[in-house]
Image 1 (cartoon, rainbow, N blue to C red):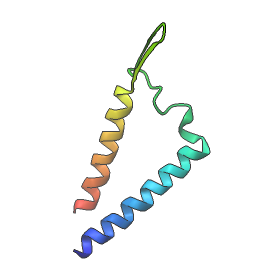
Image 2: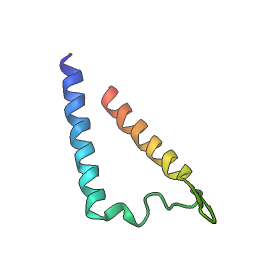
Image 3: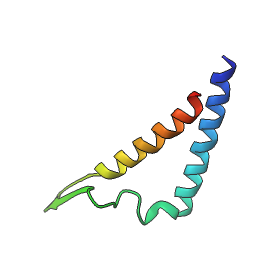
Image 4: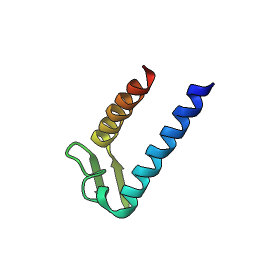
Length: 70
């Protein structure tokens, strides 16, 4: 149970750090606008799905979780 507490504290700190960086505007230029992200608009309809951004975030989270697993 002690390891779970440490993991939650570290994940919380990482989440706060990422939130502060995004709030300050650092990720505004590239986050969600990578090549391969789907953006379709026609008339009143707009579809936006950040495929590549989701894949990159998934890879980063996988690496972070693997580091804390050992």
